[in-house]
Length: 114
Image (cartoon, rainbow, N blue to C red; front, side, top):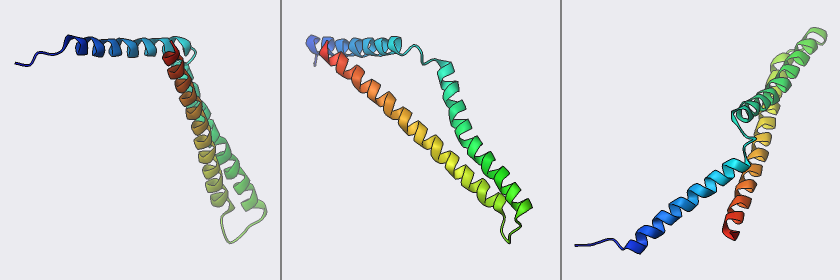
């Protein structure tokens, strides 16, 4: 009959308590990041795509009316604006994920120093 080692049980329990404590401390430090922060993020990402797309669309319509060409300025500038907007959103999210990762790394380092 194998009986578990009591020291091993205590060690596992201590690790779980330590992880929960770390998560709670991180949540307390990051209180300003609430549900509204998430909605704001969606807003920034949305506008960073919509604005260049609409600018490209309107510029294309104006060019098609004033300078007719065998190709569609509207379609080309619409697609160009959309690609630029997607790049802007990706760049912004990439930057934000780096900031979040840096905060986590700093929190982990602070937890190890205690």
